[in-house]
Every structure is written in structure tokens, then in C-alpha cells.
Amino acid sequence: MKPLIELENISFSYKDRAVIRSINAAVFQDECVAIVGPNGVGKTTLLRLASGTLTPESGAVRLQQRDLSTYKQREIAQSIAFVPQHVDLPFSFTVEQFIEQGRTPFRGLFDGLKAGDRSVLRRAMDLTDTWTLRSRIFNELSGGERQRVKIALGLAQEPKLLLLDEPMQNLDIGRQFEMLDLLDTLRREGIAIISSMHDLGLIEGTFSSVWLLSQDEPMRQGSPEEMLQPELLEDIFNCPPRHRPRLMERTLNRMEYAL
Image (cartoon, rainbow, N blue to C red; front, side, top):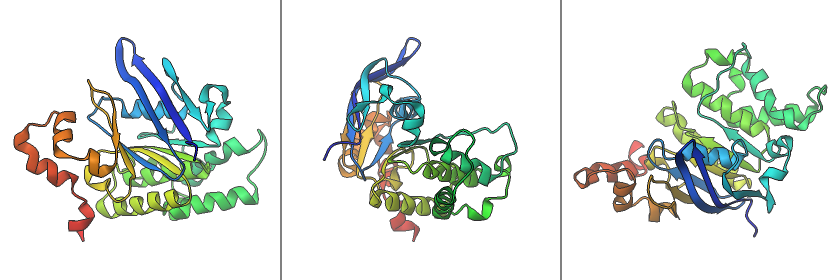
């Protein structure tokens, strides 16, 4: 099987500060990857490089064996959906109007929504439990509601690759478990997922692999069992050994003791 997306020796800097250094990775269809690391280490930057909204200074990003830089933005949006942490709307869009923007890559300039578009939108809202919010104003939603609506917008693009920047942000425990169920459903439908994650206890059981980012060392890759080891996490997060019991607790699957 050929990879859906490949990162080949990519690097990126903000002015004089190198953030991404010589990263090599590949993601296959139906794979679910968690990006883990301290704040400021480049998790969001890596997602933006994979989405084509940033261009690497060196190396290449390839979507289905073709350099991402050769695609038109419309073509990228038909295969890759990027769901950012924050969305600020200058207008009073309803939730439905907001999610409808996910169909833009598939419509002509003056085309209205067709029956097929409506079906895709309804399924995206059903999967994210946002159908009942459709008449609400996006800017008036709670943080957790906005999070689900943003993901509905991404699903409305019918992506092959879904990029999520901290999807559990502002979600309570019940909604976090629902989100994990959604990710598992999407993965089984053949959608590849790359997500930055802070809550280590939500990774094992849903994510098939972990990318560990640190300030000074090459990115490590492996299964959750291999990467979520206290010794590695102590190093990555600069956590003193005396806090290992707390660190181990944070890496436990919260599902086990939340039920």
C-alpha cells in the first residue's frame, strides 16, 4: 500500500527560529496519528505544512505521490481538511451557513447546494451531534460546541486526510469519549487522521501511532505503547523524575477509571 501523504526531510523556520527540522514521515489510509510534544515545539506548524497552508523551506510534502506544491488550493481542499484550534468569524454566520463552507471546493462560483451536498452536510452534522445547533450563531456558541462545529465543517469536505489541532480542547469527558468514537468511525471508513494531542490518556486505544516532537532532538515515531513511556516523556517534556508517578497517571487510558 502506498502512503496517502509523505513528509520528506521537511524543515521550517519562523524568522531565525527553526521549528521543524528534517522530519520524515508517512501516513497511510485509515491510519490515526497523534502528535505529542510541549507547547511551542511545532505541532501546529507540522499540521499546517501537511495541509499546504505553509510551504517547507526544504524537503517536500507529497499527497498520493505528487508534490503538494503542484496542486491547486481547491484540489487540496477536496482531499485534506484542516481543523484549527481557533476560528474567528467577522460575521454572524449560523452554524449551518458555517458548515456549508465545507462544500465550497466542490461547487462552481455561482452554484447552489445540490441534493448530494445537503446529504453530506447532514451526515457531517449527525456525526458531530451539531444538527440541533444549525440555526444558532457560531460566535455565540460555547467552546465545546464550536469545536464540534469546526470538525463538522472539516467532514463536509469529505476529506481523505483530516488534520486536527487539539480537537479535545474545551470538551468535557463525555464529549471527549464521543470524539474518540468519531475518530474511530472515520478511521474505519478509510479516512487518515493526524491530530495534535495534549491529553496523553486519550491516545492509546484510538491512535495507531504517535509522533513525539521535542526542541532539540529528531522526531520519534512509534506505537502508543512504544512512545508513551515515562522515560521518553520525562525527556520530551523536561519533567523531573520525581514526578514520574503523576506522569504515569496522565498516560493511563482515562476510559478505564472514568467508567
